[in-house]
Length: 582
Ligand code: 4NP
Image 1 (tube, rainbow, N blue to C red):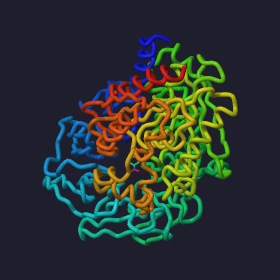
Image 2 (cartoon, rainbow, N blue to C red; image 1 turned 180 degrees about the horizontal axis):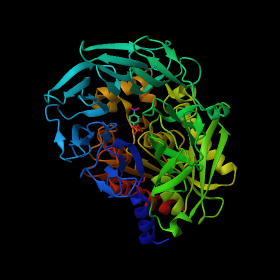
Image 3 (cartoon, helix red, strand yellow; image 1 turned 135 degrees about the vertical axis):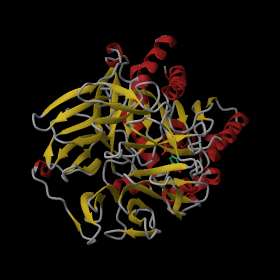
């Protein structure tokens, strides 16, 4: 395949819009989408199909809009990718952007608003803050500070809710209730050691997910009485299936509950216990308004579309489609969901996408997701689609530590990053060879997946023909020094405080062992996985005469907010793999 053809495929895939509905404002649907080459905010009138981009720049976060006042709250990076953001808001009727100037730019990690105020959590070098903007007088103040990581999720009257890691137990997360009048934070857990994820407040009742009563469950916490109870649903479709995880939960305006259950990388949506009849794949964003639901939908082989579901007629209507040409989509083969056994017998789920334009066995890429608390689901993934469409088979393991398979499975990587999870990735590679998919194998990933590329190619060098590391991690010790308070505490949790492991799990100390050629791609302004340790790593690669190429991407950070950001990562990766895998 010619370079120009590869670039055409990659560019079309990178430009394909994603749709993520956020909520309703004055009868219009607010959606996060990259319809115009950057991920930003649009409003769509579902009755006419008319759409309008309302924010010019990429946004890094958005709160659920305030329906009554038509206020939309969002954050934008003001530091060329360093992820120091400011809060902005606008009213849908006037569409003038207001900036909360008093707060220093910070890593914003949660925001919520009601008609009276905006609250958000943000991290600086040495603290995490809860900030408040009062709409009536424009006052902007820090109302609470902590060293421990915590995140706002909703606000109603005088109560701010969120979650955080407030105890010594790295496996636990608790809810918090912050009283705006008293300026007091109260930490709550229904059971010591449980994992708790708040969703939405409605009439002083918090809808949340918890492992306090066994597997992850949807629970209602009554703030006035302190009582936790399971919701009751009108329909009982939901009883037919058990979900180890959820892609979303929420209240409807009428006080019913909807949830999107997640199992083996696919989702099923329920409103008031009643199952929606939708095609296989994955929902992203779910907004319920009267008797209709709005959601993005995709799979590994079907690019995102925006749908409306009418729960009265049980019909699904396409609102926004995608624009990838058929000859590209036809190159994407079938998706298979499999489970294989790792070194210790643990079953590891994985998705396999076989390329229609490559023989079997053929060049295969082990795609490692980021997070590490993330997953590859049966949902559109630009990296995987571009690899498959340009002629690589892909196996994407959901190694221990991945989301989607229960909290016990997710928490298995704590205190052992780059240990058993690395073995799971290696066993994915072995599986692809043993089952006749792969002849040559490469490893590729971004962020935590970039770390995996470095650690796999240095600690198990004989297994790989090539490695591509995007925004990776090579030295945990230096990374800790360079991190802000949020990422310092994230590392403390992930390593369970075992700093003695940092050295053993840092690829920079195993460079002599590297054999495969490496493609290093790193955003210049990345503040999550900083560039500095990578530069030292490259210096050592030169000293040891290792084969590598490096792409430092200017004016870009960790977060891929623009279409061209994705192209700048995927294109060099594929050109490199074509050179060393075929
Ligand atoms: P991610 O980036 O994969 O994009 O979530 C990461 C940043 C930091 C760490 C892991 C992943 N960390 O372990 O500190």
